[in-house]
Image 1 (cartoon, rainbow, N blue to C red):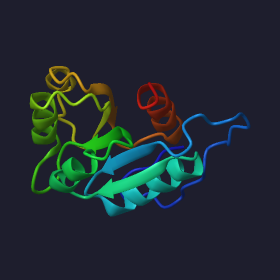
Image 2: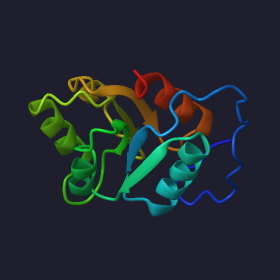
Image 3: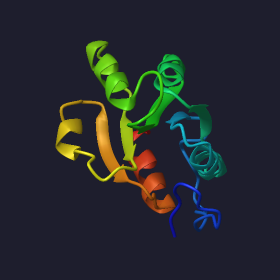
Length: 142
């Protein structure tokens, strides 16, 4: 099961029955693909996360200023300020917000992303919901 651009057959992954310590932790989802941001929002909200959506890097930068922000799912190619520019800004400001990078293009260079200390995980689109949830749980809850 996966989702990505234009995927309409979304089926929520199996719910967990244990207590969720991340309830009301805010996650920013930054991607210019509105369908994907809707799916990720539903996935994360169903797990108890508060989600804020940005469709460009400038808006994402504003959202991560909120002290409740515990992590960000970040697309690399976005309008205004792209994902790499946002990561450079976060590095310059010594931001400690963990970032999970998403890329939907084949020439995405994971080695290039390793220069940014905030980047904790890389995903190529299409995304698998359980992988996204596991990464958010692991990196955004420290």
